[in-house]
Image (cartoon, rainbow, N blue to C red; front, side, top):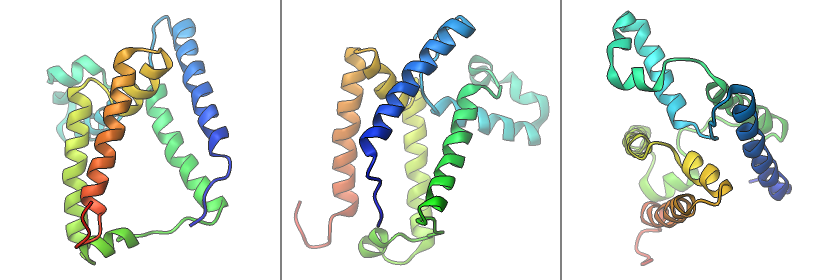
Amino acid sequence: MKTNKNIYLLGAALGVLAILSTLATTYLLGRTNFLGTSTTFVRAAALIERLFLGETVYESTYYSQIGLRVDWQFMLVIGITIGALISSLSNKTFKIEFIPPIWKERYGNSVAKRGLFAFIGGIFAMYGARLAGGCPSGHGISGFMQLSVSGFMALFIFFVFGALIAQIMYKKRGVKA
């Protein structure tokens, strides 16, 4: 597997992007919006729902609070997707993979089982992000950028529990962690 040798440069670029996005929204829009993505996924779900339910989607208290619009964060998510595709195509690492090797080793060849676990994991992740009022990038990166105690705590908790869940999910059978 190829790795990016400029990982530190990319980390610095993300930090600059976070600072510039905060400055731009503060001075151009008159309000502070921090780098985050979970609200965008909720907005996208609402826009898809609107295709089937029409204007009744706007009657939801939750959707009316977050606003159903395509904004700069929505475009950021689209840009991340397109950027990742361009990057993987340019360094020749792009491939469609239904079962990654690490999954096959741990859980077998079942696409359905992997899909079910991914779906359930996505539900927990999005529920947690919305319950917390934002995603790890919103709380972690933006909070860390502001040197807020909650930002430091969020990053610490994300890393600790992410490592713990990875150990549980991907440890080899028969080997104690």
